[in-house]
Amino acid sequence: MIDLKGRIALVTGSTRGIGRAIASTLAQAGAKVACNGRNEALLQSLVEEIGGSGGEALALPCDVSDEGEAKRMVDRCISELGGIDILVNNAGITRDNLFVRMKSEEWEEVIATNLTGPYNVMRAAVRRMMRQREGAIINISSVTGRTGNPGQANYSAAKGGLNGLSATLARELAPRNIRVNVVAPGLIQTEMLGGVPESARETLLSRVPLGRLGEPSDIADMVAFLASNRAKYITGQIFVVDGGLSMG
Ligand code: NAP
Image (cartoon, rainbow, N blue to C red):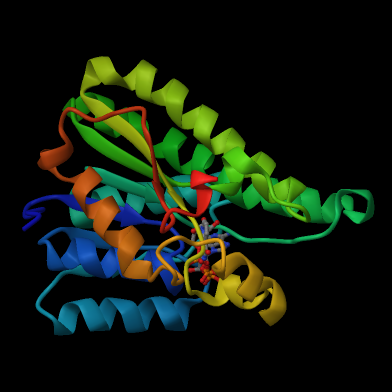
């Protein structure tokens, strides 16, 4: 049983999908959770759901790609919940297109949310973690960040960038007892995957040795472990949670 009692967590992109499962799982383990996303109604329903199960949560709506908004979000987490011990950078989008057809806006939007977003939030959170000489950062990347995927030049560049950013921060922050790890999901059943045509999804599924799509809880369980003291000697790693998809 993972115990996060007395810990304060911020989870970006938790209005639905993987982020929502992560916020709920961290709250079930006893953490106070600041929940982020842009859809305020969905955020409020999550906060009520966590409160209804005996947990404590706070809605912090903002667009993580905006530096000022990201800083204000982290400041509110610290002032209203009392600190920030665990940061999960989960917010992400896709704007798929073959490279030769990709529009500059599709490139820029994905880099802004999936790479600059985590940069903005970590810049705002890390000083506080350095002062308290403790922290756990978990960045949600993708197997695509290592393998690439046709139609996802923007997405795989952002996720590969996030892997490198995480490795560097793991080295820079280890002396302050701040651990930085990456979770790289494979095919997880969320709205994001809904954009993939049924035929393509069947083909992808046939390559998953465990024979099923992942559930958001499969990712949330790994994040809860990495956030906890049970992972206190683990930093700078990429944990692939993909049912064996990327084994080759
Ligand atoms: P999802 O269902 O589309 O959810 C994405 C979340 O990110 C939503 O809560 C969305 O909330 C939030 N978000 C998007 N842009 C944001 C912004 N600018 N600022 C703040 N929040 C923002 O996707 P998911 O499948 O759960 O994906 C979660 C993470 O896992 C992403 O980083 C994704 O790249 C990664 N991943 C997913 C899969 C998969 O198969 N599903 C595989 C590999 C990696 P709002 O719309 O309310 O802002």
